[in-house]
Length: 265
Ligand code: HEM
Image (spheres, rainbow, N blue to C red):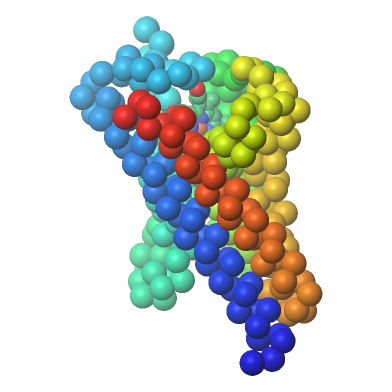
């Protein structure tokens, strides 16, 4: 095997491992949404959303706000599942027609979540600090732009570009999950909330609020560059960065379940 083949294989394996860990972590997120919000919403116990700490969950008399919150959290489970399904090559090859339908569902719901989330932050006033609100609104804006580009390139049958925009959309839609994983991973690794405040204004909070989507996007661009240029040094660099981020994601996904979700199930 040539040096090129070894580095290409290491790169492929590290990317697959990253995806497997992220998919397992997102499956736990979906499970939490269904087990916590799904059961309470379906049985009409909407006030029980507040059994876990929230900024603004159920508010008595706020029918519109409660309805948007319900739609937002329940569809969050669907968009997360659809996003994962889109990225599995075997699924794309085996069922291309289904891939197109889950793709349309994913992109439409991604836009709905960005708009409903932005509405909750801006109109309902659901945010911890101005800087964290700006960060999440930045994520919402990128979701809308990337989803449109992914859709347009698919319609134009420019499939290589479509693949890239679809993966960028996956990263920014996963931004809200990465945020939880990023915050909890930081606490797990440091053993305490170093550089964090209750209002998300500490230096670590600010870096993670913006980094929750900008860091995954940067790593994705490195992955694209390594794939297209086929330079061993770049492929080793990409493999190393992806492996380190896999370890962080694993620690954060574990922390999110232990600290954010598990105690309320
Ligand atoms: C696109 C993917 C998104 C997913 C999968 C998602 C998921 C969720 C989930 C599961 C919750 C329930 C809160 C919890 O238990 O932690 C939630 C709440 C919320 N989301 Fe999203 N969300 C997404 C996008 C957004 C965006 C782009 C924004 C803002 C622009 C946003 C703003 C909010 C707000 C303000 C809440 C209420 C939080 C609270 O009251 O504590 N979401 N979201």
